[in-house]
Image (cartoon, rainbow, N blue to C red; front, top):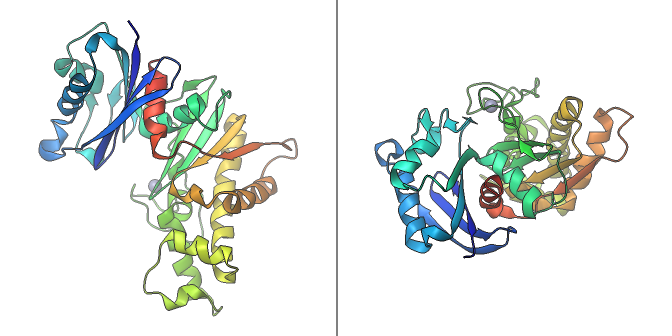
Length: 308
Ligand code: ZN
C-alpha cells in the first residue's frame, strides 16, 4: 500500500494540513480553523479528527506538527498565540490518534519553514541553512547537517529576537527592545518609515497617507521615492547585520529570506546582499542568499520533512 507523510502547521487563526508522498510531492492540502477556546484544548483533537476523516490511517507513515512557540524534545514550552502553556504535544496527540506505530514529531513553525524550503523549496540540496521569515514578526530557522537545531530551551533560531538595534530601541512583543523583528518585519519597516518621516523634512509620497503598510513603502521605493528607499536600505542593513552575526556563529551554506516582506524579491535581496558584505569577514566572498519559494506552504512541507 502506498504510504504518505502528513504535515501540519498550527497557526493563530487556521491550521494547515498537507498530505505528501514519500518523495515530498504534495497530494492534497486543506485548512481547519484554530479553536483557541479553553486554552486551545481542542486543537490536537480537531487535527486528529480532520486527518482521519480525509485519509485511511493505514496509509499514513508519519505526522509532523509545527507549532508557534519554542519547542524542545517534543515539548512546546510556551505556545502563547494558541493558548498553550507547556505541553507534550506528541503524547497528547496520541490520545486522539491512538496508532503508536505511526511516528509523530513536533517542532517550531519557523524552524519547519526552513526545513520545508530545504525539502522542496529554494533550499533544496543544502544541509546547513538559516532562514529569516519576515512577516508581521520575524521567525528564524536553523538547519545544521539537515537537522533542525532547537537548543536546550527551544529558543535556538529565534533570530527575530536578537537585539541588534541600539539606536531606535523600539519595544518588541517579547518584552525586550531593539529586536531584529522591530526593524525588519513588515511592522518594523512601518516603524522605521514613521521615524524617518518625523525626523526628516524630505518630500515623500508617504506623507500624504494617514497610515500605510510595508508593501506601500516598497511600492514607493520602487517608484523612486527617496525617503521610502532610505527606509528599505535601513531595514536591509539591519537584516544584513543580523545575518553577519549568524555567519560568525554558524557560517551556513545558504540564507533563505521568506515571509510576506520577501515578496519584494530582488529589489530587497540586492540591498541585503550589498549591506551583508559590508559587515562580514573578507573570507566570505560568495555567500548564497535566496528568496524562499514555498510561501505559506513552507510549514507543512517542513513538518512532513521531519517524519520522512
Ligand atoms: Zn523581541
